[in-house]
Structure formats: C-alpha cells, structure tokens
Image (cartoon, rainbow over all chains, first blue to last red; front, side):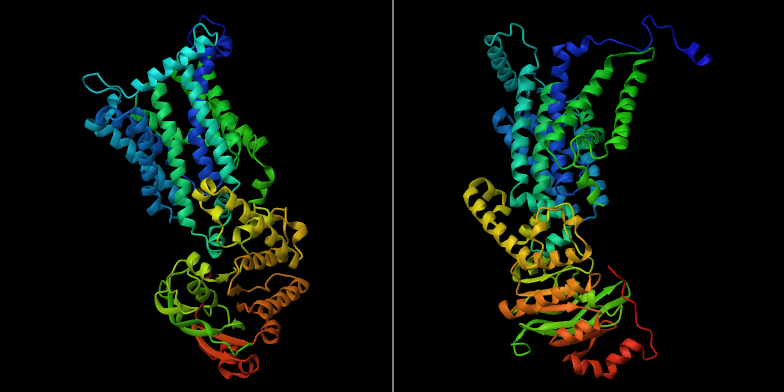
Length: 339
Length: 267
C-alpha cells in the first residue's frame, strides 16, 4: 500500500488511455513517415542479414552519411537538391564499400562490431567537426539563413499539397506529402528487391548466407557479392537518412545513435527474416506502439513514460519470440532448418 | 585412358603450418588427366589440409600448384573452381535453407543473371540461360535419382542424399577435375555404390579426373587407378593399388614405426 500512496496525486484516472489520437490524421501521418523511413533502413538490413547472412550493425552510420552528405552538398557546396541526392547515395555506397573491404573478411560477430564502430565514428565526427556539420547544433541552413537543405523539398511539398487540395482535401496535413513520397519509395524498393531476390544474383546471395565456403567452392566470388549487398544496403540507408532529415527539418547527430539500427533490427525480427514485405509491416507495428504509447495517460513522470514505451516494445518482442519466433511473416520451416 | 594421360595437377613442395605444426610439410604429387586417384594416409597425415591448399581455401606458405598448365598456388578458391577444379567437403555443405533445385542451379557456370547489370539490362538473356540451367539441373538430378526431391529444402535430405547432391552440384559446374574429401563417409553401402558408379561413368564418358581422400580401403583398392599415400605432411608412396599395399613404408605409417605421428588440427 505504501507504494501506491507514494504516487503523486494525479487528476486523471490512473491507467486511463485516451484513444482520441488513434483517429487523428496527424498521428498516423507521423507514424507513417517514421514507419516508412525505418522500412527503407530495415530493407537494407533484410538484404544483408536475411538474404546474405552478413550481420551489419552500421545502418545508422549509412543514414548519417547520406543525410549529412545531402545537406552539405546543398547548403555548403550549393548543388541542386536533385543532384545532391544521387551524389549523396553514391557517397554512402562508397562509404559502405570502404567499411566492407577490410571488415567483410572478418567472422560474422567481428564484422558486426566493426560496423557498429564505423557508425559511431561517423556520429562522433558529425558531433565534433562543427565547421562542416554544425556539431551538436544540428545542420539546417547556412549561417546567413539564405539556403536551407530542404528548400527544394518544401516547394515540392507545396505542389503536392496543391494536388491534394484540388483533389478535394481542403486542409491537408502539413507532412502528408512527405508520407506519400516516403511510401512511394518504399513500394519501389520492395518491388525491386523482391524481384532481384528471385534472380540468379539473389540465389548467390542466399548461397552465401547458407554456406560461404560452398559458394566459393562453386566458383562464386563471395566477397564481391557481400560488398554489393552492403553497398545496396548503404543506398537504402542514405534514402532513410534523407527522409529522416526532411521529417525533422534538421540533421542532428543524436538522430543517428546505435539505437536507430537496433530499432531497425527489432522491425526485422517483428516482421520476420528473409521477406521484404514483412519489413514494412513490422515497421508500422513498431512505430504504432512507439508513438501510440506516448499518449498513455499514467500517473508517472514523462521520463518514466518514455522508458515505459521501450518496456512495452521489449515485452512485445519477448512475447513474439515465445509464440512466433519466426516473426509475423517469417517461414518457420526456414528457421528450423537453418540449425 | 587411365594412367596414360599427362598430369592435370602437379603440386610441388607444398608447405602449410598451423602455429608450430607442419600440417603439410613439403608434399609433392601429381594427378594424371582422366584418372581416378586416391589419397590415403593415417589421421593427421595432412590430406585435408593439402586439399585445402590446392583448392585455395588455405593459402599455402611455400610451394607450387599447377593445374591444367596454370599456376594456382595461393589463388582464391572461386578462381580455381572456375578453371575447372571443383571440390566437395568432408562434412557436406548442402545449402540447407534452399531447395535442391536452387542448390543445383547455383552451381552452373557463366550465368549472366549473376550480375545485377545483366538482370537490369539483359533480362531476356538472363531468362534464357535460367531455363537452360534449370533443364540441365533436372537432368543431372535424374541421373542421381534426386529429381523427385527437387523442390524440397536441402536440409530435409538424408546424409547420403546430401553427399549425392553435393557431387551432383559439383558436376553442374562442368569440372575437369573433382576433389572429393571422404565421399564414402557416412553414407549407406547402396548409395556408396551408386556414387562409385557415377565416378566411373563420368570418367569414361567425359574424361573427368577424380582425386579423392578415402579411408575405406576396399573402395580405394577396388576403384582407383593410382594411390598416393601421405604421412606426417609428406607424400611417402605413390603407385598402383597393389604396389602401395605391399610398400613397407605405408605399412609402417599405418601401424607405427616407433615414432609418434604429428596430429593435424582439424579445420
């Protein structure tokens, strides 16, 4: 009883949950953008982990390199947004190759450590190279405030908003155009990856996942394939980085913590390994839980509430592992047979 | 045909150490084209390590390995496999979570669809090759009586069936020479006999060279043209099965001549 009495008086009924947010379009727009962004990130992880068997923990680093490269190319170098994006994708792919070349020869667990280290190097560099990245102030516009990295995006967003209005939506949600573009990209990426997986190229990747030595003994240059897998994952990470930056309207080191990659893995496990559609599903569930629990109206402090969200996510994953270890859409037979 | 051909594989003074242990300690041997040659020796003689050095899985420290007139010492495994020397493993490496047919199709050489740019820019060529490869894969599977399992996951096959699959898969690469590491180990006598029949027929029909490590002396003496014996990292005897069987050095190596053989660490 004394525990209960220690809880500060709270005007609301304890454990009440306001469900109003559940019908709010702004809530679902926010969830949708985050879910789409993390789907792109986790698609790269799925390609690496689920289909090539390389355990990449550096996805947050790919996002960071992509987002910073795009922002710097637009604001500091003065390139057009449309040129900066493909260039930033190429830079991120090159970064992926740079990490992969020395470390892909390592055993799987050491490779995982090397990639997480690489991602952290990127984040600490972004934090400290203030002249280039704005450090902990984040990166958005030039000092004169004349050029911002998302100028072009805003005019695109306005155009889409115009279409929405002419389609009959009188007061569209401000971020709705971003939602549309994110999920358009997700759709294209899922279809492309799904198709690529069914080609002989995808077959070699799966063979490497199953047994790299067997693939080498059959004449496959496995290092080249693992590098391709990593570079494509880097490109997807860069896309996710763009959308995160446009969503938050800033590029900030704190957005690229290792936690980002861990959430990507949680999405992967939730949806199921070795399936691309499942990634999108897992991401939506994940972000509905993460964002929905913000609205829990409990007699606890905000910090406790923030921690509680991750407790709920953790609990969900534990229950999933207990009752459906292959993930929602994973194939159980593939999981059992792998042992 | 047997024994009359030129050597297709020549290894000279190959050395490979693990720490202070010389697993392969200056081994030299050659294998004649179109022959079925066995590699025998007591446990720890360095047979598997020598296989690994020849096929590029372990870089050798010193020595020379020439295959089909080409120096392949310390070249990567995929390069050596593409030259036509393909190996199997002591512990079978079936690609467990892939169907049997995918195991087979993977192994076909020169597939344009294995390059992403062809997938995007030459889809017709990719599709055509894919059809051809699938047809051949099924033919080879029929040969090995595995066709009805084509769509099953490789993991569901029995140990003996996996050995057959591994051999069938190696054949999909259209090899000039096959290195088999204990092909008879862990399979039933019926499947074992079938495997030997396949070896004989392939040698006769396609001139494939076989070089295999085996402990079953009945198989070695009954089915090979030539036997190479290793002990303590060196080749100690080389000849027809009957000669080797009577060689006192070989009897010494197996029964012990007073000195303790150095144990090879198993990979």
